[in-house]
Image 1 (cartoon, rainbow, N blue to C red):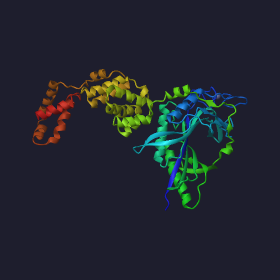
Image 2 (cartoon, helix red, strand yellow; image 1 turned 90 degrees about the horizontal axis):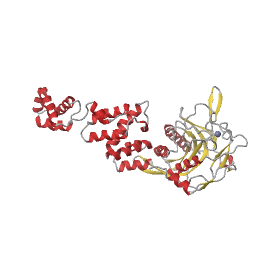
Image 3 (cartoon, rainbow, N blue to C red; image 1 turned 30 degrees about the vertical axis):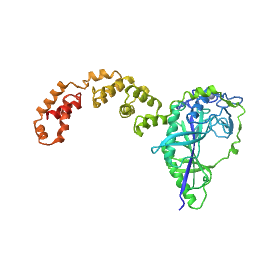
Length: 477
Ligand SMILES: [Zn+2]
């Protein structure tokens, strides 16, 4: 039987987080505005006679986003008018870039199943968003807060064959946009919306099959389900001797079904033409280079560095690079402690867990204590002055109340006792108080050794140095 291979391309809309909208001074409320239709004006409502003025911040952030995906910059790009009517769009057209986008070919690197992979970007262009329709109580309401908000549309090459590749690519894209401060790219808030194009063809075929497009599949898990479903649907069609039609379909993630919406429009249907109200966009070298200078080390480069130089696990490297502030915190901590493994584990196993549960501290930038204090905790542990068990308590207290690590350690009597005389007294006492166990051990039951260490630790209120207890016990037993 013929084996069919699926090919997937993505069109991704990312909401740019500029302060104001694309062509007017209205607030670009990236999170939901408290009320409908408050961030609107005659320009974004497209009243007759109004003219758009291109927002420089949108161009700068878009350019940064494009360059962070290694895209070639087009020094001259142009806006085009795409005509369509829909009630969420007061303009009856959209201003987009069809013929000459702001950036062309690029690529995004990520790790798929432990392997570094690179996926091609066809281009990215700028365009404005529409408003939002709310269907309630048998009526449809229009909210234009989002109308005229700036978007990047990222079009990938048809380079994905497995859903794991799509997932890792999208996660990486999200990280890039966050790291470059271009967008929060939160799918739940509609700041990253994904159209999925999928076709199938017999293995080894030189041409792609006809593709279907699913618009606005709005969560990672929905994309995962849709890819499986659409592959099986198309497979069934070709295996029954029919042909897949080129069409736009909708994905219903509650019922897990894909439904026909319309046969795919050709560019002709939109009557594209150069936007007469805007001049071509020309970028000078200074503008491009100053934008480029703001791009930080990309999350994937950091991740590879953490894996190779610091020998962190891929999971830890991935987690630490999800957020720019988090990875910068980690970098600073490593610089201070020179201990990447411990720096990683204090962040990933203690701090992140505390932030998850906390009501007021959810970001690394909200921490109540200075990074110097966490550095000190790691120094104390490495210098045998604090046990790693007790260090957790110190970090928890820093997290809740701020303050200083050394003071917390001393006030709670946690400073590890390395004083041989004091520890020897404890060992002697434990031996005297546990005659039966001592006899057992001396009779050959070596498994019981841990029990003595435990008793000594307990007697020292967990402040004794376990290594010293170990040595003393071995000598005395
Ligand atoms: Zn406006």
